[in-house]
Length: 351
Ligand SMILES: Cc1ncc(COP(=O)(O)O)c(C=O)c1O
Image (cartoon, rainbow, N blue to C red; front, side):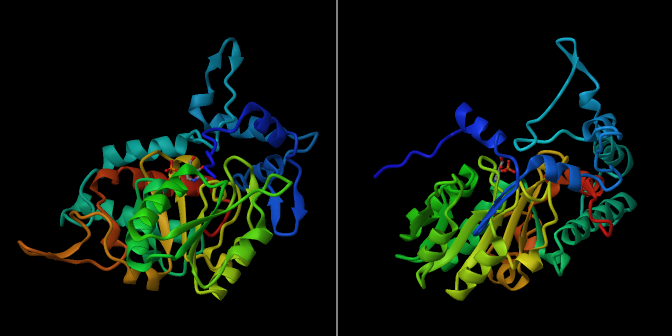
């Protein structure tokens, strides 16, 4: 049977989400309460609103220059953060600081500006690692966005590890960016996509997900928080089940990292992806987390400058991860941004 995946949630679906935002705990899932999560995880300096204290919106609004405008005679209200978030002034200033202060090539120059840009770049990598509790900052690979990070895993890990008849487990609620790369790679190697449907609560059926896992399963690629359903998947359990059959787990954390503490070691995720533009940061930068032994075993994804060790006329040798996967001159300016948006989100005081 041919199943067409929805492009956008229908208006009635949107209504069903908004009318059910209270947290519900069921075997294997939670539906995210945005009200609760926003209030409890945005910037630690912002107190949870009470009847007598100003609202979260009231306290947060001054930080966002774009909200200082009126539309049709009213203050602009923006609630499309799952698609892309607005940027606080601190993040906007980071870009200006970069171009006015130390615009130069990272890891390539021996002059002052290049050294400063390289320091900032590497300190941003350490910050991202601390933010998701990676044990080693080399496990963080900067990408253009989450889509590129998923494609990196699908093509680099997938093409080297998947063969005819192997199974890739996804849910029908994955973002298209998290489905299509696996379709492309599955077509190339003859692997099979196994989709887990929604249950009667309209969230991915976790019991079915557990049932579908077998020795044929090579990777489970699922969201942490769904952009359409707001379901929160029990990643730690899923990783435990997947590892039990020898499969890897890729977590699409685009919608979770902006709202909740995400700890890759605790989740035992093999790969995890996220995107700056949903984290109060700029477009054009995202990251892939991968366990070091996995990244080390993977071939390059895109050829180019920084990913090489030596270049000969007929072949090249490749750098160690994370450089092996990076062509980064084009996003130099975005890196300090990313560092700042994490700082701004900063609900982890150690970050
Ligand atoms: C759950 C999820 N995964 C992946 C993506 C793709 O993210 P990016 O725009 O960084 O490629 C999105 C963007 O909407 C998303 O919500």
